[in-house]
Structure formats: structure tokens, C-alpha cells
Length: 581
Image 1 (cartoon, rainbow, N blue to C red):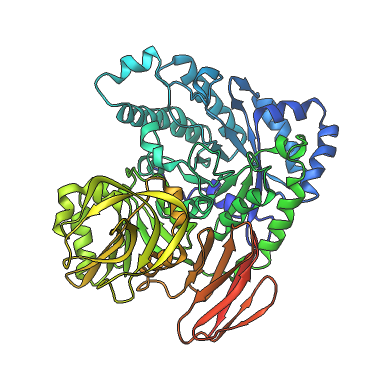
Image 2 (cartoon, rainbow, N blue to C red; image 1 turned 135 degrees about the vertical axis):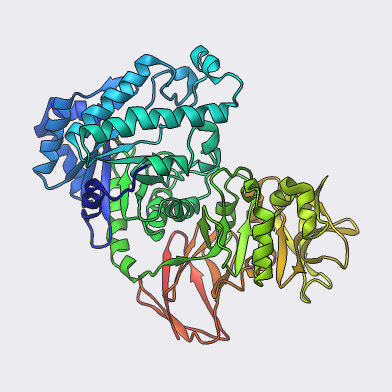
């Protein structure tokens, strides 16, 4: 088991190309081989990136998709960059070139593939003090050998076991024998909801690897098959920081599927660094300097880094609604990030915080066998425990400890909503959504639990937010539409009810339509960013002792009126407020 405090890790953290963070670029093996054909020409083309972005590190890859760079080629490439005062680390992408399987992992039932991994790691460790695994270090092979080796295990368990064995014997043991100071990093993809099915495990891996790295790619959420709300770039940085405190070395994003809107590329970088990444890695070198599709991204991302560096040191520690997700959690794919796009700031963790004043539990939290006892302890301490309808569904009869609220088989097609002005004694108002949406119907008992927001049916209504008392605390249920993106169609008055559930733990909230994000820090700083495609008034709801705020980007001053600041938010602009008390 590694501690992560080796010399390689220490040297990594000493590299900074900006005042507050470092920027790295990843160089795939085909880039390495191409550059070495004419280093003079490569130097001229590289300037398109280095003239715009302060590059402090390059990850030099020696294997990907049956393409190899030799140890001698790695050394030559390393000398090139070190002569330009750019730190060098090694990289490897453990994928095959079998196009039938989409992104195809290496097969660790295959002796040839095992030898590829072992020899590639050996070469990298002999040249570099640090190796990063690109996020193809997952398993998706179902060949005849794997089927035979799996036996009666589930695919999930087989892959977890096989990955652990390969990591121990073909990666960590080999790397540390070749170079005892080598810092071996696993870069996780952003699709953490599927990890256990493909051999990733946030507990096993972090015990084996010296450090981790975070994939913060969100791209175009309409087309990415991995269901990637943009808030994910922030959420996953914070979540993985809890997985490996002080060993999550940075966030990594790319320009793909971002040509529809250049801001979608930059937003990945903004949110990665809002989440306190130590380093931001740009993938990949050839796309940014050769490909005409993406060459415009280099000057844009350089300007973004300069802007961020001007105020990042003024952000305190991130704070938000505590959200517990165990390492083996599944279900309601990325629901936290969908709600994050609705203006709810989260502080996620792989560990349950029984001191939190409010705790958010999505379906994934139900995979903790002790979750009922943990909830009861929080409620005994006077906390609010906020759960999703998916959590209720999977808990089944276990949830009856808290109330007889169940997830029925019935659905409701709705487009009009109401809220309660008297803590659930009645509902009133009629707020129309921009689209008709489908929600599950929750069964509950009147006068035992209370509806804070509802959807109208024909002479009927269906709960959207429920709340009731248990011990010294309160339990809340938020109904998630069948299509989680339909959360964006909940009217602002309904979203305000959901946001208000965290009032015991968060001092600041917003009132705005969905797609306006809020990020909070413990030194009276808040960031608001709108992903709407039009200007929209946003209201910050504040404690009574806050008298105003200064926008650290524009320098504009705002006065609080009746504990509120209202401003007109432009699309894709960061409003960084420093509050005055």
C-alpha cells in the first residue's frame, strides 16, 4: 500500500506555471513519434501553444493502441522539453486497437497484453519520476479467455479482481522496482457512476496508486453518451478530493464536442479550477497545435488561465450541501450535477459526515448497508436529511423507518406546479414549466408528511418536495423526473423550494432559473455563472449582516437591499462576489 508521500509526488507539487496553479499538456505517443521526425519544425509549431499558455509540464506517452515509443525516444523527447524548462512526466494509455469494441481496453487475460503493460511501465519508470495512466485503465473485454477466467463471478467482480492483480503485479511492483521514487498516478474518467462495472474502484485504486487525477471533461451534454452536466467539472474535482485527500493532483479536460460553443471548452477549465485543482492538464497536444478545428482554443484557454490566476488566491475553501456517495454507489446517473446546474452548490464526499447540518443522499448512497443508522444519527443531531425519489425507491421497506413514503409504479405527466407558503399545510400558486415532463408518483399519508411543492394534475396534485420531522431533525424527499434533464424545467419557485432545503447549512442561495450555477467558499466569496443563452436577473439571498459585495473580476460594487443582491447575469460570465459584512 502506498502513502503517496514519495519524492515524485513532492516534485510534482513544486511545479507551477501560474501563481496559483500549474498547466500541463498531454502528448500521446503518435505526437511523440511525429515530433521526433523533425524537432526544429515541431518547436515552431509548439509555439502556437506555449506563446499563449504557460506550460509547466508535459506528459510524454509511450504506448497507446498498439503504437509504441522506445525508451531512447522518450529520453530524446524529455531532453527537448527540459531544455525549455518544462517538467516531464511519463504517460500510458492502456487501450487496444480493436475498433469493434469502441474504446477497447487491454485484456489482462492475454499474455501479450500483460507484457505490453509491464514493459511499458518499466520503460517509463526508468526515464521519469512520475507516470500517469490515461483514463483507459478500465476493463471492457469479454473475449473467450476472459469468459473462462470469470467463471461464476459477475463481470463487475471479475474485473475488480483482475484489475487489482494487474495493478499490483504489472504496474506498482514494476514501477517502484525500476524507480523507488516514481509517483504512479491513475487518471480517472468522469463517468464515475459506471466505475465498478469496468474495474475501477475508488477505495482499492487509491490504496494501490501513489496519486490520482481527475477527468473533468463535460463537452456537449446533448451528445456525450456519459450524461455530463457541466457542473460535473466542479463536482467531480471536489468528490475525488475526498477520495484521496492531498493526492488528487489535478483536473484534465479536452476540446472535443466543444466547437458548437467555445465557452463550453473554457467552462471545463473554469470549473476544474473553481474546484481547487492544483494542476490543469490540456488534452491533447496535437489537437491544440495541428488540428485547424481546435487551434483557436489555445489563445482562448490562455486568456482563461490568466483571468483565473488573478483571483483564485482570493477563494477560500469550497463549501456546499454535504452529499454522500460511497465508492460502490450506483443509480440516478449524475443527479448531483443536474441539481448543480439548478443552482445548488454541493460538497460531495466518499465518507459520510455525521456532523453536517444537512445531508443529501441520492440513490447511490443506498448502497451503504449502514445508511439507515447513519441517517438516524444525523437526525438525532438535528440535521436535515434530503433524499431523492430514487433513494426512496431503492431503499424500499427500509425507508419505512422514517415514514411510509413509497415510490409507486404510477407516473404523472405535468407542466403546472405549486408551492407552499405555510410549511406544507397547503399549496398555492400556479407556475408553468416550459415543457411537459414525466415524474414518478410518490405515495404518502396526508398529515403525516407535508408537501412543500407539488405538480398539478386534473383535480389532483402530486408531490415534488416532501418534508417531515424525525427525532430532532427533518427528512426531505425531492422527486426527480424520469428524464433528469427535466429538472431544468422545474419553475424557479419550485427550484427555490429545493434550494431552501439546505438553509440550515448554507448562508447564501440564489433565485434564478435552472442553468445558473452557484459556487460557495468559506471566506465570504461566491461565484455565479449562467449557462442560459440570454441575460437573466439573478438574486443572491444573503444573511442579514452582509451589506454588499464587490465583483473581483469587474471591480463593480453591489449594495444589499433587504438581504438580497439582484443583478443581470450575462451568459458564460463569471461573477465572483466578495461579500462585506
